Amino acid sequence: MSSLSSKHLLGIKGLSVEDIELIFSTADNFKDVLNRPMKKVPSLRDVTVANLFFENSTRTRLSFELAERRLSADVVNFAASSSSVTKGETLIDTVNNILAMKVDIIVMRHPNAGAALFLSRHVNASIVNAGDGAHEHPTQALLDAYSIREKHGEVKGKKVVIVGDILHSRVALSNIFCLQKLGAEVMVCGPTTLMPKYISSLGVKVEHDLHKALEWCDVANMLRIQLERQDIKYFPSLREYMMLYGLDKSLLNSLSKKITVMHPGPINRGVEITSDVADSDQSIILQQVENGVAIRMAVLYLLAGKVS
Amino acid sequence: MQRRVLLDNTRFGITISRLCRQLIENHNDFSDSVIIGLQPRGIFVARRVSAELSTLFPGKKIMCGDLDVTFHRDDFRRREIVIPSATKIDFQIEDKNVILVDDVLYTGRTIRAGMDAMIDYGRPKKVELLVLVDRRYSRHLPIAPDYIGISVDTITSEKVIVNWKETEGVDEILLENRGTNY
Image (spheres, each protein chain N blue to C red):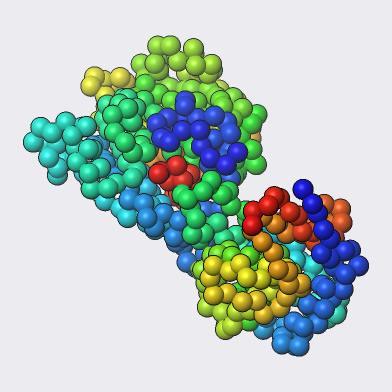
């Protein structure tokens, strides 16, 4: 197989296992490119990519922009806060205006779930979902699974626990889809209030005791508490959350085996994980960031091959 | 579909040996020279040549790497997407004499991409091109090989097939006619 099954990357749900394997094997090559003296290839030199961020982002936007520039694409950036969106322009109008300037690929982050899918139905460009509300964040899930594959050799058969704010997390949902497709066992762990009601229908184990969850797993993905999405109080205090669901060094050392610790960033140090855990040799947080560029290069490269 | 043997197993071996000796004439003991095979099929020529050179210079490590040119191709988005192979160059090419190696030289576009890809790893002192088969009169670019295993005159409907003991079980070069496209 030499191309993706879709011209968009809207979510992990729409990808086949072959698509994911293809993205991974292509990312292997881009990882090699990123470690060369010259970290740039000319593949996308006639492709223009617009990064549309209707929601704040540092890491994902920077990672996409680096990926685009290292593929030699022309890049335009758009932040909703400084655009005509604040003057009342609709999403389709905004995007069609950008496309009239001959843009081939749109990378979009939007606070509303389904925004990327909606756009893909109404505009003629390849859409890459860089996060839509609490729905999906496919490139994050791909880079997480890729990092597990890199660390453990393969994803199949691995036990991964996703800890924290599952309710508001697009990373959790995309990770569940991606890891399950690749044959991993997935558990979610967090306070009952931050657990979606029908989460077990996705085929994941549910655990509320962090110690038990960590004893079970090979890899723990510690999610950020998304205070900006929490319209009500879901737990009494961050201090209490840290005591029950935070990962510190003593808890990590008390486990019967060495687990791998991941975090999609940005870290609230001292909330989800303490600094000594984040900076320990069991953490692959910075490898995740490095792999993020390679994965996004692979996705853009494979989608650009479909742009006519 | 007709097939004709251009080089059989015996002559194949003689040709590799001859190419090695031609290389020695210009590169002495390969202290300042490296061999880079272009993926996917040029690596077989490069490895065979470097293995034979190693027997000619016992104890000397002949530097040989694999280079993938996919991301530097000029036909991206003009044909089915090409999935890259691995690049493995674990030595410096800065200020070295580089011998780029491919199996068949046809339009020259792969070599052009190969030169671009190679420059990403440093600035060589000099670059030469070794090919096992030179399909003459078919170049799209002004590229000429320095070392040639065999030159053949072909038409577009013909295809040159290089088989290797490692993958196909026999060393041979065939010319296949795939129709009457002339």
